[in-house]
Image (tube, rainbow, N blue to C red; front, side):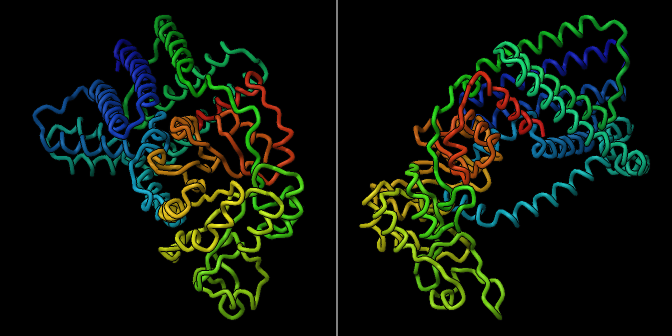
Length: 505
């Protein structure tokens, strides 16, 4: 591309950044899956239109009159778009991920099998990404090839790619991700030192414009789009500054950056333990730490094969001569022969006697009995209503069983992986895994008026971050640290900038 064409491409990138920010604002306001799909389709058209313009200017060719080449170009464009989704897709991935309308049973199955699914997905993605990087100039080859033969262009692209060039492209992608990360951290550090709303808005605007700009420029380079150095770029610079101001104003419209955090999050003692002062999920730890009168003690229970409920976190337990066995597949007598376990019935009675409300996590595996929730309600219904005890679980069907049997008992959904439109589910509260929680997810479930907890927040950093995101309670092993936490919205606002890492990585 000559200098004027390069300027035109840069202006097109700026226009796309504006469109991305506007579309993200629309999805923030209207988070229904149909709206997210429509906005994603618009992004696809605009993004691929930008790349097509650059490739056309570089190759001086068009697709017109070559139907097979047009089809191959469309398929490769979809391939590129899919590769960008795990890398944040300029902030769209979170909207897509948190708006997918799956059933509660499907949510439970995916969560139970998350390790297999996640590992498989990572392996598949790495393979697809490596292939995509290796063939990144295929679209340029399609347009440059004078004949309507996509396979010929593919073979030529493969022949022209050396392993040295492939390695350089890999390093370029890694450099892009590292640059975005370091720039975001730099902006966060600036805002930690300089406490000013205007600086905050401009910093978020800078992060959005620079991150999207870097990623679009790098992807363009990978696709083979050639740029010419601009000698008189005052107008381009002014355009960039206007973009940053616009992005900062869009940040100001985002309710996630304006909502004040809960002054005192509900403290939920994880497994009944404070700073490793007892063994988790035991009556001893409950008795010891109930004296501090925190709002809730959270603990875990498992159902045995003979339908007894024991206090235990891990799904597997070691049985001599048989290795690790799932609790669901063992009867109580076998477990007690080799391990000391507290019965949940005794634990619940102790909690009632001590006046300590519980949040009980009902553990779920692929072997969990389909009527586990019904049996739980039948066995413990009278004891569950003596105090405002709660039940939460990844097992949505079991929560519904308990709610039908015990309508006054509040039930909540636990997330191990944050995904899907969980605001649709009929629960009373949510307990979200804190690492991948973000403003859109918390705002989406928060709009339902239900309480939103996070787990497991042990460091001061994670406690502050989740408080700034607006959760109403936190599950923690460090209850005293959370009790002494002081939240200053102006001073701690820099933490919100770190959420941009999820948008661009």
